[in-house]
Length: 119
Image 1 (cartoon, helix red, strand yellow):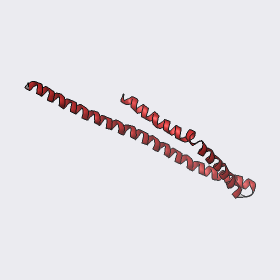
Image 2: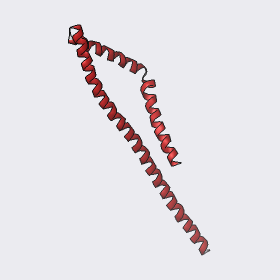
Image 3: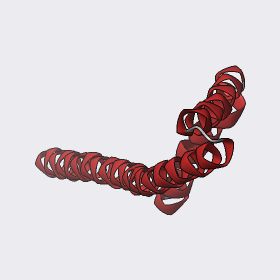
Image 4: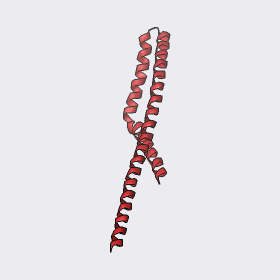
């Protein structure tokens, strides 16, 4: 009877260690997935910021050029601003298709890639 109790206790200890290791592995996988998603979003954000600054200066130049051609600088800025209000209205109405769905697909794709690594 004593050997059966020792075997059960040994089995219990092995299951406990296995469970603890499995939990730790899940935590590490979650950290890896989270860090991959966050780093992708931050690098994309940095690219968008740099591109936005470039676009800002190009728009100022275009506004000044149009204003110079029309004889009044404010008209150039007014035309460029009108263009951007039209773009803003289009983005507002097509927000799901242009922004939400692509970002959701990106996150799902990253999660699926990470899940395939685990399996």
